Amino acid sequence: MSEVERQDDTKAKFSLRVWRPIAARALANRNAVAGLLFGGIMVAGIETALPVMVGRIIDEARRGADANLLPVLSVYASVFVFFAAGVWLFIASAGAVATRTADRLRRDCFAKLQSLEPAYFDVRPTGWLVSRLTSDCSKVSGMLPWVILDFAWCSSILIGVIVTMFVLDARLALWALAAVPPMAVTSAVFQRFLIRSGREARRVGSAMTASYGEMLLGARTTKTLVREEANLAEFQKLSTEMNLWAMRSALLSSVYMPMISSIAAFGAALVLWQGAGGVLEANGITLGRLITFMQFAALFAQPVQELAQRFADILNASSAAERIASLLATEPKIGDAPGVAPIADARRRIGELRFENVDFWYREGVPVLHGFSLTAARGQTIALVGSTGGGKSTIVSLATRFYEPCAGRITIDGADIRGVPLAWFTEQIGVVPQVAHLFAGTVRENIRYGRLDATDAEIDDAARRVKAHEFIVALEKGYETEVGEGGERLSTGQRQLVALARAVLRDPQILVMDEATSSIDTATERLVQAGVEEVLRGSSTGGRIAFVVAHRLSTIRRADLILVIEKGRIAEQGTHRELLAKRGRYWELYTNQYAADRERELLHLQDEATAQTVASLVGDGDDDE
Image (cartoon, rainbow, N blue to C red; front, side):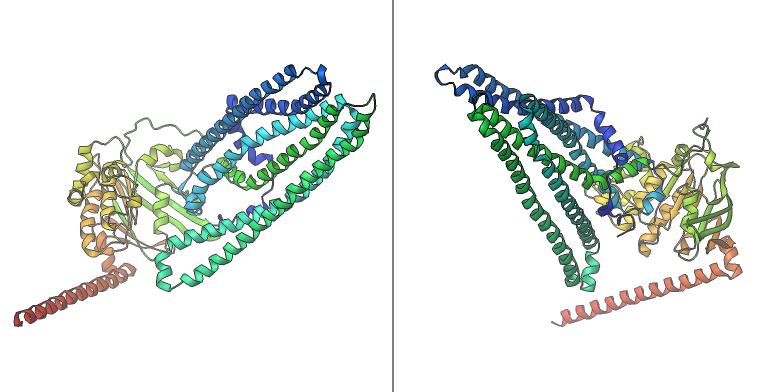
């Protein structure tokens, strides 16, 4: 698990600050929130009035022949119609608040993620980010309306019951309230243990989720290393711990609820003890009023329980709320400098991209580039080669403004790149990565992703130019073939050709090809290389600046400038011929790779010859028969 995934949910504390952005989006649904509050208060008012009505019915019934129960029973029955209407209103309103709040949160979180720089995603796993938009948003948005409802409902009941009891009989009201402090203390103690159990269960649940993910992603490795039993033992340990915390929560709940009910019953018993004698006195309280007070005493338990439970829910969800608030509060580290003027001519051509004494590091004290300087002109192809970790990919990431220099500067036509509108600059960039990413959809849709307003004819032309048209039309549905998630239904070479077609269609002014042929076989490489040369040939509007991060040096012999990058510095530079003539680092890399390629070709030829010999021998044996 990454450091970001290891955020300690068990230590999250309640803070109004983290709930503000979520509450603001919930309260924006004014009509639904008003319906929620009105429905809760109306139901609370009716529940407060019902014990009084029951007492009146009992007292009226005790009058015997003189009793007139029809009016009071009619009112009692009609109240339930309003009660049902109130329940419907707050349930419907709570659903509206929850769904709309979740929708706003998901939209805002997604928009925020879209605005952040690529570096933000380098240190945060996909699963961690996805859970912000799914489980976290659903958790806080689904809980918040019920917290609002219960706050309104519980507050109204407690206030209504207390006021009503003191109006009816202040002495009995005090006896009825005697059970409230023990209820509050018991709830506080048990909720503390319940909260800890819930947090520990979530911690173990997160570890189990991570274990699931590692198992699915590393299924082949697990089989290869015969790790099934070890993985199962590790998972069983987590599952056992999860079961223990869940059982502890269930045990605590099984004790807590009866205790609260017992304390409420004790309060009712106190009222009965103090009030029973008054019923027998001539001027004492009536039986109906005594029963009303007993119901009030029992009614106190429910709002106390609900408030304690909702407070626990808020504490448990604080970690999710904090993660959402943190995401929404994140500001992009790469953006337009203050006072950046828009580009007057959207068709402006980039003539030169220059690095001026650039330093860069991902972590303070661990430099990746040192005083790097380079001038790249329009129409020029620059290849970057060297050892792994030398800084090649960092250079192209800086050129595309995925990162900003830590020292020095990068300029476009003499102007600092920070003074160019980021949106316009991003539109001028095209990237073909080492492993091409395709989106779920058709081949045509993935190529069109390079330019959404492209016609079908332009898409077909782009595919033909990079030699992708032949394999596309050979597919079952041609350009309408579904590529699957991540392009899984296509081979690596086919995905790379689709990505090249997308780059041709986009026609960028700055093109980056990050080891685009390193993960494919030699035969497919020749086909892809033909497409690469077409992409590098130049823009339809006057050439482009191209950066090629090369793994196979045979693919960059035609580059205008080759840079050998070692430990963040330019070790050598020149054309292919010039660097070979120097017999330096490039010559060493090229000859070693050339020898390895020749060895592979010879082994391949030997394998073919052996297969042909075996086939001929098998054929001779068949003839003898």
